[in-house]
Image (cartoon, rainbow, N blue to C red; front, side, top):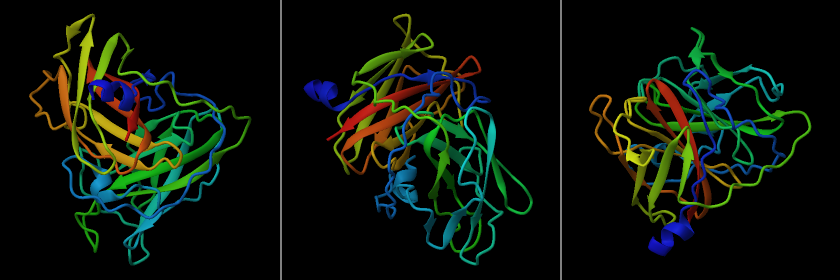
Length: 292
């Protein structure tokens, strides 16, 4: 998109943080609750590294007999907290056996309804199948909690699932508008530039280039078995998509360009969160992407 890149791709950098601080400094904004719409998972063809394809759009709490359950419908604002949940299988019992996906048995995401406050954590599971996701302080508002997993047994063995539930964080809320569009911005001194042309429901190449001080970055370190982790949420309903670069991993020598298979199912604004590691530190870039 020569004109399309400017018109279709919107890129804004929001924050960075360490792997041990999922809230990412600069992402703790207040936002007013927005209504989130429940929807059945969308059927998409297989795309390498894309949970949206096999796992659905994440807006449902149950799929194919698997259900995400939690006793937590509200969480306290402004302090570290724990979100507890279980995944029950078609037999109604908690699932305790999961396949490793990018070195983890469970990927857990928290996003507020205005697509701020992103957290990506890896919860721990007790022997009875109860998971606990440790969350950094949440700002007041409406949140959606996503669990991405692959059962290692039963009817869903080997199938990717993304299920979610909503949570309310009481308190005074202030809406944060989606940031303005741009194709290049900075975080922690790194400049991130996005190139590509995306149309809803169609697969297109997407390239991310990372530089620092005008020089190409070539010291990206592996993070979750890849050089970058890319998660997307759709404005309005917070539909979920999960993409990964197709670039092969060769030690601590990633960059400056990362190639993605990108296929987002619906038009409109998508908020992307790109996570990459250098020098042992995890950086998080928030990207607003306009899909035609």
